[in-house]
Structure formats: C-alpha cells, structure tokens
Image (cartoon, rainbow, N blue to C red; front, side, top):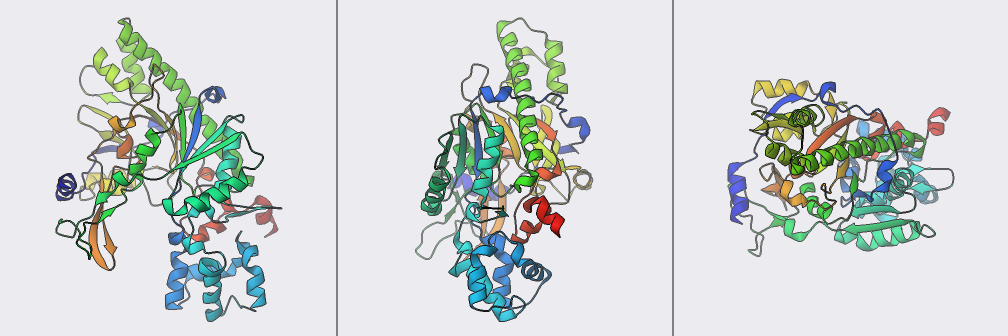
Length: 459
C-alpha cells in the first residue's frame, strides 16, 4: 500500500521530451519479405473493454430526450449499421418511427438491452461490418487479418478478456473455429495482483462502505505481464476496435508485413553486434554508427563496448505511426533519459504543458500512435527476455474518477506502449492512415474504413 501512496504523493512524473519525431527519425523500409514467418508469431489483442462507452451518447439521449448532432446522425443512418438486420423485424413489428422521440428510446433499448444487449457485451462481440452473406465482429476481423500475414499453417491469436465475458467469448470463438484447425486462439485475464490502490483527494486510501480499501484494475500497462507469459519470437499488437472492412484490408496486410520485415532485419544485425562484442572482436565505430543511425539512440558520453552491449541487448519493438489527424492519444517523441536520448511513445498527460517549449514540441507533432506494434522478445541466444525488467516504473498515470458519486484518484501502471516498454529499442515506421480505424463511438462505424467500397459507391 505504501508504494502506491508514495506515487500518489509524487504525482505524475513528466517525461523530458526533446523534439517530436519527424521523417528523419522514421525507419525506411525498402524490402518486404516473408522471412519473419519462419519465427513463431503471435497476434496479441487487448480485448477486455466493454462496449458501454461506444454507446455513451445513446445512453445520454435516453435520459435527456434531447436530440444532438450525434443522435441525429445515428438514426439517419440506422439502416447502415451492421447490426440493423438483427433489429429490423422488431422495429417493423412495433411500427417504430426512428424520427419520433419516444420510438427512438425504444430502439435504443432494443439495441442496448432487450434484443442485442450491446450495453452489456464486450466490444469484441459487437457486429461491425456487413458482407454479402455474413456480418463480422472484431474477433472475426482479427482472425481474418491473421490469416493474411501470419503463418497460415499455424495462426496464433491471443486475446486479453474480462473474466465476466469468458463464457460468451468461448461460445463465440468455438463457432468461428469450426473446420479451422490451423488457427489457435488463446486468452488470458488482466491479473488481479496488478490492481492498484485508489485514494481520496487527500491521497488517503479510498474506503468502501464496509471499511475495505478499494483497489482498481491497473490499466493497459498491467498487460505487460500477459505479454510476458506468451511463448513467441515475434508478437503483433493491435487493439480490438482497430479493424477495417475487408475491402480496405490490403494496406493493413502490407503494413504488418513491412513492420515485421524491417524488425527482423534490424534484430539480426543487433544480435550479430552483440556476439561480436562478446567475442571481443568488434568494430566499435561501426556499432556506434548503427546505434545512432538505425536505433536513433544518442549516447551523450563516449561509447564503450559494455555500454553498447547494454543498449543493444534489449527487446525490440517496431511501431507503426500514422500522420497526425488530431485524434486523442499519444505520439512519438525523442526523449532525454539522462545518459542518452532515444525514441519513446508519450501520452499528452506525461508532458509538462506548463513549459512553453514542451507545448511547441507537442503542437509540432506530425505523427500519431495508432497502437500498431511488432515486438521481438527473444535475445541473441533465442531465450525470452523477461519483459518486467524493461519497465520504467516512474511513467505511471494518475486520473480522477468517481465511485458511486464519490470522487477518487486512480493510478494506472506505466502504459503498455509507453512506460511498460520504456527500456526497449524502438523503430518508428510510417503506415497509411487507412490502417487506423478505431471505434470509440458507434457512429465511427459510419466512417469509410468500416463500410465496403461498393456500399460507398452506391451512395
């Protein structure tokens, strides 16, 4: 408990950003190959989130009965949602008018509670995309993606899910894997021991009505433990809601192959230099140049063989970056770690915005983190890194929340692609904006990336 209180008292620790990443810090990819398929690849999909937030605006409409641009757009396009066919019969049988306020609330109830129960389902099980003869959820789309850039003889996907949704998840996946013996789907839960203490606004433990102390889930960063448990050489990471309609899939497939290809090439070079250093026969100037030019690490003092070894012998991540479109979230920066500068993904909340220079750097950011990573998690001997050794425990997040109307402060572990991977080697590669299709609200499903090209032509 004391270690949590100490962190609350210290508050969020800011990262020391030097500059926003530009094209100069990006890694060019000239050759794309399938060599990575010779390694054991696993696709890791954080999927524990409930769909409730997707429908926040519909819940608000139920309470207020006030039309907004959001609700108007939702009902104008009701027939275009992939789940519409499941509710059409009920709407017709009740003769509901989607332009009538009372009927609108009934339609919302059909979606969120009565028929579809979407208000209580995980986002993974929401029907998002329509095709000629079937409708797909994010689980279906992640499987489909995996079939196109993982080894087709042995496709491994791992979802992190909520314990509450285990039965639903199993039931759905079992149906989808009939006659697909080449696909192995596993899942895990965020570990209870990664829960963090909640405090009141004075940083005292937040007490429940029965006197117990409240602990909360420790956020995405806690999933580094789940990642660490996987048996794999290469791990692809992508959020559950970042999927696209299959008519747009080619860019995503090519981007994934690109990230894996350049990662494998750099990983081989890293391992070679490590073996050279260990043998005592190495060219320090050449290694220094590789660390600066390829890994974009700037060591401030004179590099030695031992220091080069410590910088090289770390997990490697290749992160796809898209052009900044003003979406909320993190981005790529060059960060000062004291002894050296290197590439990091930073959230806005980790940057001291009372510093004018930091604000300038943030506003100049050209790229955005869509959470599109390919991770190389074995060392030069082929042994698995212990990923827990490469976390920056100082990069945690503190936020204000409520519990039954009472305000509290919550603490999240260092973010999975922020502080939990702080001490990894990092490459940033630009990927097309078409590979980034998050579904934060239900109306996001009306964007081009979630609707077939033919469907758009017909309009």
